Image 1 (cartoon, rainbow, N blue to C red):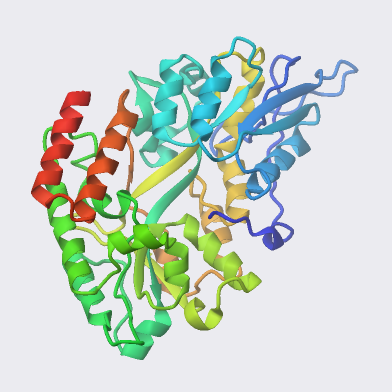
Image 2: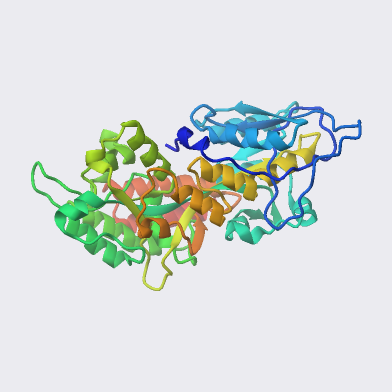
Length: 450
């Protein structure tokens, strides 16, 4: 899904700060990352004949071959840390966090840095005492957490932070310009209420046999519908006592299904139609999806995997929002790094975490077409300057986020809550339960979990 734009890396060279290592390491840890903007830079130890001992950092990742930013980060870090070798261990993306938790529960684990894929998995590792609190390092090095747009607050556990994010994906609205042009309908804008969005989707819908155009599209994920309800910053999926704020969005989507504005959930489940195939097929006017799909669109159009005549003229705008909610409010997911409690070189592991999650690491991520957790002006320019990125002003402005809320905030039992909401979302969307009954079942299930 999140393909790396390999042809672009050669055009972008990242200038990194030279960062020194702390105490030498004898066991295999993970990578190392540059420091953040206003932090005081450290320098490599001077050549006094007593150089730092070689250090190998063992780093847990997934899908190494299809996600080349792993290698890009490792290569850039090693350029300025000559004594450090980054050893990546690919655990695969299927059940990655479960596999990682199993690995870290063994007494002989030798991982130094681990990648955190999701919040439920993060909660598990914190509870297992498998990853270390970063509080002392953050304080010592003066890390400015405000640069992470508030997401670190949402993964703080009892006042402590156990990961720093280096990647951040957020939801935007993709649209097919050719379909709008053919219908002589103005493009969507960066400031649309849900009412305006629904009206626009209906205006773009064509139900003619053989010339079907869907005004919008929703993937089968729960997040494609429920996240609309938490854009106000007042509600989260953890609100087990009352999920009534989901109701109006289920009503909107199910009414759109009934009127042919979007494909039916039950059909998508039966056919197994992926959202990328739906949008690239050229009969979907709009689709809410994560920013990771930007890199997929660019690379697949460049390679010819997607037909340019069907979806080559595309753009993005900010997520729709409820009345009274600022435009640019959206939901996001983070990918972070943690230092294991088993490492025998925590200082070196921290230096890598700090570099990857800082501004130097952000530049590497942006150069590969991915969104860093710290969105600097340099990173923004790198992304919008990628060949194939839509060059209209609205698409560029769509990347400016006003409020970012995590799809899944931290809670000790968030994995169980997630599962319950997923289950009853499917029941509502498939028609097995009414909206009211499904929401009541969600509330009862989550109350029992809490």
